[in-house]
Length: 212
Image 1 (tube, rainbow, N blue to C red):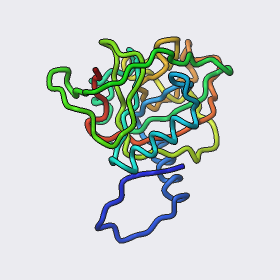
Image 2 (cartoon, rainbow, N blue to C red):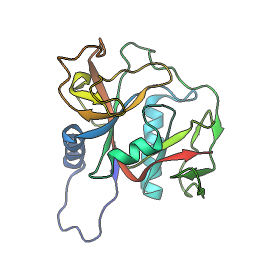
Image 3 (cartoon, one colour):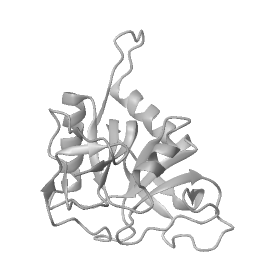
Image 4 (cartoon, rainbow, N blue to C red):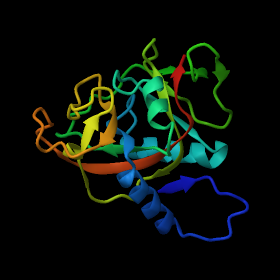
């Protein structure tokens, strides 16, 4: 499953498979990215979630993905996107059921890139749901692919918000801004370092926003 924006002046035609591979390669080679442990969301399975978000992009050109993590706040995500394109890589939890699903469902109506100016969510996208509070935010994507095989080595990244620290996922902090760096000689890395990649998405301006 892959969807993305197309430029009307583009002179080359690419198959879905070629675009999938390009998106995956760009994400894995990008010096900065967002890595997120994927779980069910408010009673909705992983496959259904990606299908719905893909349909959002087909209709509206982008989709909003609700997150709640102190390691991926809007300013942090916007910062990693400041100098180059950035991507989100979704991985499986270390153990089945290891990603806690959300259970409380509220629907967002507005978003803000800076916490001051608020705008209505775009028409044509599906409801952006989850437990809404002051920590609620959303990543914005304009391309998604689930045609992914292989695993991600978490020891190949450091924590963007805490340089020289290895990535660590904990309950309530399953999405992290990351920087590519060999961390095999550093202590504190995740014991389960290799995670199957579930999906890859490309971040689109303004990349990450507050929700209410």
